[in-house]
Length: 439
Image (cartoon, rainbow, N blue to C red; front, side, top):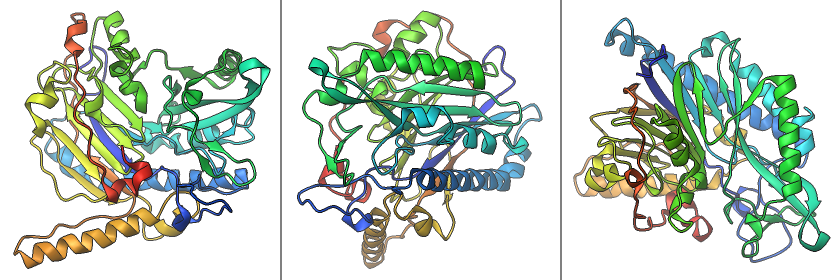
């Protein structure tokens, strides 16, 4: 356990939701052909934000209700001194709207009350021992590009909130821009167009300075803390947090190391828990910064959650030597058992999930998953094999509480994180919904 933390355990509750772009079958409407998708959401930005808040708060209540149902069972088998911090994690790109971005000014000045409404929801006293990772907000503003041309610069940030009336708020920024993060948008129709080579990775110094200035104002007026170098402390626990490609970037730039790796070297200790919010990432694609047997949690917008444990204390050695130490829950999952963590899935949005998501998040992929589940179960019955229940709708994936391990105080050496990229994963039609989403 961290030396100053009252928490003895952490528990992962992942919001398993598709946050990828939609297709024609999801309600895209555009006159052009040959385009692979679009951003979903109401053209009325206020209505768009309100719908996303409704989806988020519904999922929060579902997560709490399921945790409460299991609370007595868990506590009955635990020592009296056990205290668990629940981590509710939402995928990347939850907040982006029909244009793919929200206005930078409108997010910060409260015109789009995303942060305020989330703080209001998390402030309920029943959430005092919860830590919310609320998915990312994509926002932009006009700036000057190359040779004085007009450009749209953008930031991808995630609000993190400790629940309860006295809860704190943090903001973490995504540092590494991927070419699939942000797609150019026709202002008239909001349709998907691929970014040109290298264009999506260009950042504006002017915008960065403006972002820092505005963030400072928010800090002064609203008490929001900016997470530096992907590590922050909550009630004595050191938490490492990464947004998608930030987890993987060290493997792609001439073998350089991620910000989180560098930070734990500076701190001369490991983190107690590592959290990744992503859309198209996997834990195995980047370094593990937790101590031996420490947990890594991930919620991904391709419709999956993942959990891993750094069993050997040597980064990715865990992956190469013991693949059973990894749990992945996809849109179509059968029961998986693991000696370290059991899990259950429950509906995140209830029976009205389709109507709630309609026009805001993809729904057609779940229909495809249902059809395939039917085929798989029929094949299993034909061969005399047991069929499994496959939940083909948004879920809360609830994993069992995990003990907080003693931190490793010795400096983490660079060779600890020597990594080789795993072979590319195969595209899964159930999860990725077509060629565009294949990784």
